[in-house]
Amino acid sequence: MRTLVLRRGQATAATIHQPRSDLLPSFDKVLLLGPGGRVLFEGAPRDVQRSLAACGSPSPGRGNILDFAMDLIADPSWAAKLHGQWSTRAEAEGRNSTARQPTPSSARCSAPCSSLTPCPWPTAMQVLMSRSFLNFRRQPSMIWARCAQVLLWAVVVVPVYAPLGNSQASITSRIGLLHQTLGILFAGTLNNLAVFPLERDVFLRETRDGLYSTAPFFLVYCMFELTIEGVVALITSVIMVQSCGLESSVQPQVTFVAVLLASIFNGESVGIIFNSVVMSAGFSVNMINALCCVVQLTAGFMANSMPAPLMVVNHISPQMYACRALALTQFPPDLEFECDGPSPICLRTGTDVLDMLSMKDVGSVMGNIQMLVVSCVVYRAL
Image 1 (tube, rainbow, N blue to C red):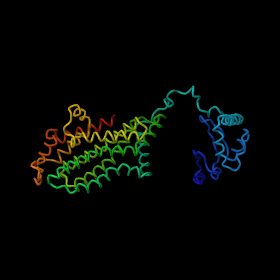
Image 2: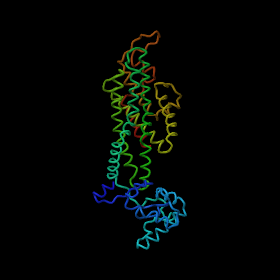
Image 3: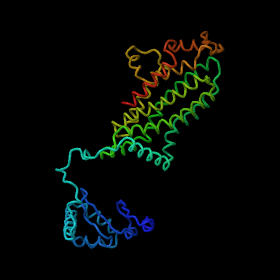
Image 4: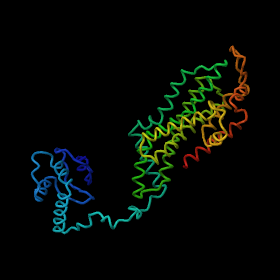
């Protein structure tokens, strides 16, 4: 860095906690700050020990002088002595020492940054987008964190269920596979836990400083999230449908993509809600896991006969609409099954399966997809 500074002739400030002894001479000036941001020393590195000795401090010996100084200023009395010495010297040199000091706490505004005007939306979004691109480029693991859960799920599930046939046993396998698909909601929350807490902390600091409003952060986060999740949902759905032998015409394939995308997106929304209220990631995971289990079980494939109050509450669950959309497209009327089992009960067509699941009259595929989209918007708005 010093070579770059000398070559370009630019002034550079480096914030560092405790530099090594061999790095200290590389700095032209050192600014030592104490509690409350008060200046305790300003000058050449070689003058640090002299300044400490002038205040009556003991000799640091041969150790790192800045390590010794940091330990020393932890004592408020020594910090006050050093600040007084710096103020006296600054006044003697004709500098305004008071202009460098922070405003007394009694004179501060209750909203520290209310005097700042937030950046306009276009400027804030441009900066946030550039920073997000840079973060993804520097940390490819962030992209992997958003993709791995769903893609690895497909890799594990396909060998278990493929290939699906047309026997009576295959009906159970199809229902089981579709039920597992609804569990992608929890994968969305794990994606959120991998990325959002860090983004949240930066956002809270910057909004506290009045740099920008909530809307630009929200929009940029959603744009990057939807881009990655859309690609993951498309790849995963093609793998699942084509490898397992599910209904693969246009409508079933598009519906599968939509359900996967909506499940991941709603999982992210649930994660945002919990992680915005609760700062403990461990507690959030426990609560979210319990919630996702209940939502998946009550969606319709496993619990299709529930008390009326639970059925009413279930209408706010996005997975209920996802379940219905999958069932309507994966068990069409023209899908036929063989009666090859010893049981006298035989489900011959997709309509028979829907009747068994109590989903014969649950609306159209498009109607359930629309409700799924509405749930995405509502839960993200929360």
